Image (cartoon, rainbow, N blue to C red; front, side, top):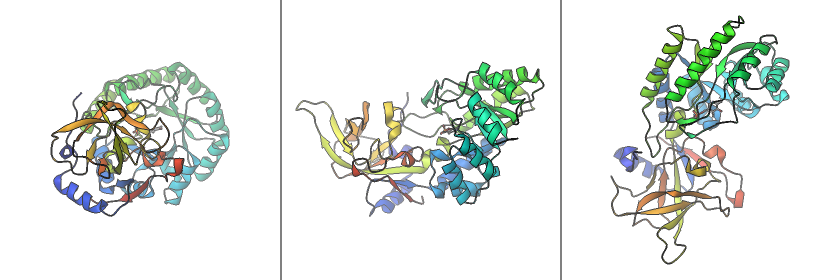
Length: 393
Ligand SMILES: *Cc1c(COP(=O)(O)O)cnc(C)c1O
């Protein structure tokens, strides 16, 4: 796979100069968040899939400023817990702009969401469906299909959704309960590189729409989930290509009369709006003849970089003094600062840095706007949770 190895693939010269000024007196590690980029990403999604109603997956980056920025843009919000509901309400977002997309929930949390005004719920089991019917009567329910997540950097396979045959039966049951069987939902896996996964999923939806129509159940909506890409080391097709293909799949299966379409972007909305700035704590070797140095950073799996699990997500990482291209480099193993041996970031995939990199230098970990700060642990080894700043380009 092609790789983007140069910092100028990501930042313009002016942006880099500005950024260096901004971080100058700040203690690492921290996440720097750019809200203009969030607005740009929203606009890009909205204009490339104009027929889709956007529900931002709050978990991707729940920083108040990010949520408020998307609120101003007119986004809706997919929430997974009563805490995210409370956060959105506190920020002035009304419940009619929220969907409760987590298929795993307590009955009392459903009741709470209902009391606050939420009327769209996702489900994938009879147990949860019964809880919704009882605690959120009359609500619209989206039924989540199980997909394998093949082709995704961060697959969500197995845990969410149910087999189409079970979903079909659930919807038949739901039609006799006090809920509205409203539509289907799926998630093809996060950072999905294979656009064809949407094709399979949409075809499956068509099949279920037809099968249920035979029972006079008319589903009205499809939630295409998340999975849209952001920019990491290995580039993907552009968002425009994703949008064009997905629109084609919808036309192929549903003609011009689309059902109502929802999307729940997380990573693609906020991934490239964040940069983690980290200091190199130590550079060492494990043996005299070791081929690779170890480079220990002040940020690791427990304060923001959990998605390096299995080296799934490969962030673009650059030395603060990086110039265009890379010369005279060496490959290193990157690890975090905690006393847990799982806190190794990249050992199989080796990042390259110029040989002049020293302890105390800073590294820029790019595209860390999604699934980082909120995953940060509370004082493991005494390390505080990752802090953040808002910066302008
Ligand atoms: C996390 C999540 C998303 C966001 O997925 P991305 O791949 O980050 O866009 C969307 N929908 C649901 C239900 C989720 O849990």
